[in-house]
Image (cartoon, rainbow, N blue to C red; front, side, top):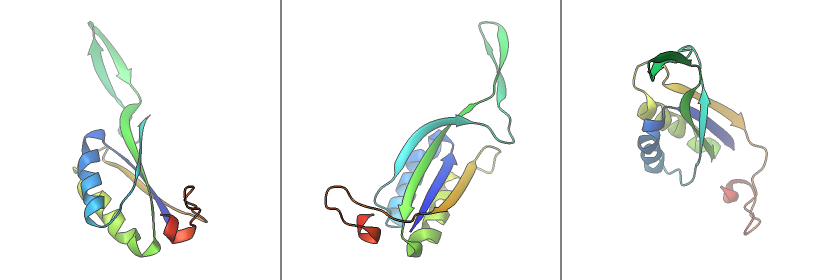
Length: 112
């Protein structure tokens, strides 16, 4: 099993969710986060004063998938999240040693 963590622009969330559903991914976790990468934030004007916004709002999507579904899930995320502009985000893939469904105590692939 693998865990996919994708940090993306918030307005792309619905499109990503739909793309993952189309490739058979049934569950995901979404966390509102803030951060910056190469874009290094931006400046805004509030009540006549200019200030720098270092941390931009993003959404972190976490999905645990079977090895067989990994490439399809990654492709679905990238295709639906991409705008071609700076700040589109990142995708990270991590190993998952074990998964347990609390209600039924199923383990491994059955738990996801």
